[in-house]
Length: 285
Length: 284
Ligand code: SF4
Ligand code: SF4
Ligand code: SF4
Ligand code: SF4
Image (cartoon, protein in one colour):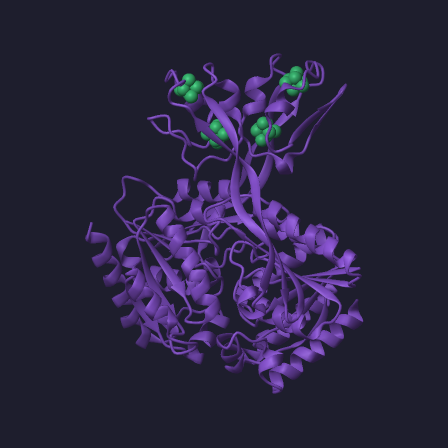
């Protein structure tokens, strides 16, 4: 079984758009949306949810004001400033570290499981999808990503599917690190802008750090062809395989507005470019 | 006045709005905080001269094995599995630690000392008259929020009455919360596409959870569909600025230049945005 994670560093480079088209073309795979913070893939895949499960990511402290003697110990030990002057815990600030719980002399504090989101097993016209929604202002995106990936893997085993296609998050932090664990290849979607190039370099370092080989695609390459060449030679230097280029074309947004993958919506240049990328990607694996 | 610029979806033009606004306000003593510490990009456009750059470190437990009795109390307290006691052995996993100090406090024999782990660097500098503070997360480090907290501590001088602009990370989870917390207004930047609208709704929910106020910039307003406008009307979200799709802006951006410098006809638009921001924040 092979697992491909699609990342970009910088947001908005076309990561999810490309994932949707790869999902449309690829047979025998499970798709996993690990951009749990701002998941968009479902807007194109339009899943039919088969199973919905609550996600409890961590703990949170609750103070029983009846028992509380207002000694102030908890406020002193909480390094996250989560307990206000009236001994009420701020859900937003509390990291669930448990320090207050262990130091309260009156046993007025309990640590409860924190409901941090939900995850879904779904069917789509392009095969099964595992996805999730992290609650607003929640932590533990990394844990939810690991959970989604674990479920996708189980599903792939049950149904004898060969590939897991993972749409990752922007950035290089907690959810991205979790999505890299155990992956066979990182596909970096970049664009010819100095910001995207800068962010791509950080993703390459991250992939190297975790020992995952990387490949790259340059989206909207004709926006600045000089920079496209710079990005591509950077990939060469880093030993990153280039799988193709995609043109800057309004048809991409039109397809999105229709809730369709590009390859479903058109047979034009962009669709052809995406098909080539899939071919190169499968060859690279 | 603290203005955070954020967006649910990445790549909608957050950095463009922050950097161009900063340039316009440079005579007013503006400070720009790049809190998108995973991918800090504002400096690529404003090219500040760095005056100092310091590694930012946080507490992790360092166990003195001479003193430790392997009683296991620290491991019991730690909710993150960052310190594990097994029989006559104790293991620390620094990357899991949230630096809550609980283990150190609870240890009955004072066996836990101050170790540290580097989260990233905080750099301070100037781009002309613009004061600039940036955080950069170390590659392989998962926890952005403490570093963001540090950037804000460095950058926000409470006594000063100047304008502070914050470039926030994308999304709606803990790093964004840390970045936008305490601001007078959150400027959300979106594109009028299904992805843009979906992520905008999440961002608005985030702003409301924090009980903050927001206004909207619609970037590339001539693409996609009109659903963002009807959403704003239903939800009563003020639209501060619309920027039509213009390939020249994309090209200017791709080269790391400022729109207000390369395409001076856009100065008026950004000035208008600042006026709108002022009106909204004054309506307090
Ligand atoms: S430590 Fe316990 S008793 Fe003391 S103020 Fe906190 S909750 Fe109340
Ligand atoms: S669990 Fe930790 S973060 Fe939450 S209130 Fe208690 S001490 Fe503070
Ligand atoms: S609490 Fe102190 S003595 Fe007990 S296991 Fe931890 S470090 Fe060792
Ligand atoms: S400081 Fe807190 S999170 Fe870190 S090891 Fe100690 S108890 Fe665990």
